[in-house]
Image 1 (cartoon, rainbow, N blue to C red):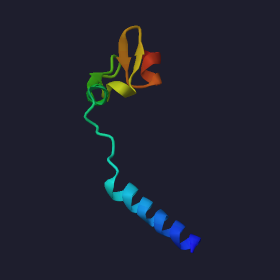
Image 2 (cartoon, helix red, strand yellow):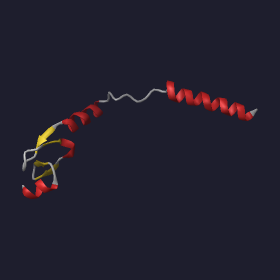
Image 3 (cartoon, helix red, strand yellow):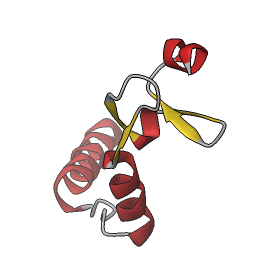
Image 4 (cartoon, rainbow, N blue to C red):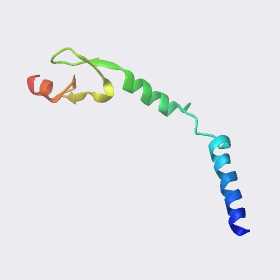
Length: 73
């Protein structure tokens, strides 16, 4: 009897978490700033290749796409 009751509670909890629990919204201004910053493209100072700002290497206030370009520049 107790096993059936626990099983019913587990099924109800599973249905609740799958269908009714609200997921956090992605409308925060912080998230928007991070998304726009990461999608900005900047030009490599050495080779001229455009890379996302989040993936660049900054050295001497210049943007570089890779360590090889940092060594060249």
